Structures are given as C-alpha cells and as structure tokens.
Length: 100
Image (cartoon, rainbow, N blue to C red; front, side, top):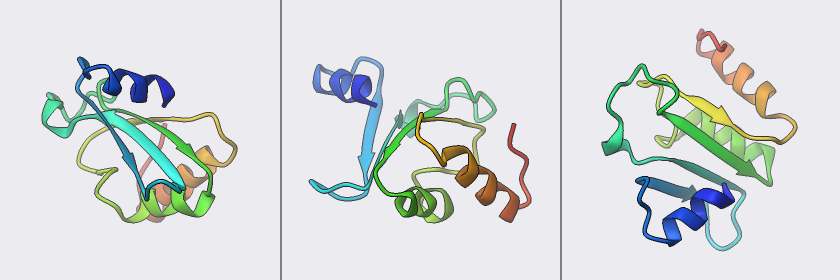
C-alpha cells in the first residue's frame, strides 16, 4: 500500500488509485489499478487489490457493499493482516462464490 501511495505521489506512471473510507481518520486503504485501465476482466494478476485496514468492520463493509471491489472482474486481494482471508471467505460463501 505504501509503495502505491508513493508511486501515485510521484506522477503515477502505473495508473493506480488509492481509495480510503474517510480522511484523515481512515479505517481502510485500498489500492488498485484504475478501472479504465483494466483490459481483461478474467486477468486476476492485472486486477490486484492491496488493502490495509485498522478496523475489521471497515474491511467487511468494503467487501460486502461498495463499488470499490466489483464482482464483475476476477481479482486478487493482497494484505498481510489477520482476518483478511476469513473475511473474504465469509463474503464469498454468502454470495455462493468460490475463492481460490
């Protein structure tokens, strides 16, 4: 996440965007390729999301009910915090979707 923020601050040659739930007291930060740059909706390597969160409820809300994470494209979600895998699995199973 920090690397993407620094890349965006330096001109953003990789066409990424950084999204937060609120500012300056954010609960979650999501980085992703700009939607207009997506070429193939099945390419989950190009459609990578990186996430850092302070609040598990903010993560759950992001996965369940925002347009920031769309179900129209295959994607990878990357993060190193406890609870990320469980939250993704819960949302996917509630929607009847498979997570690899």
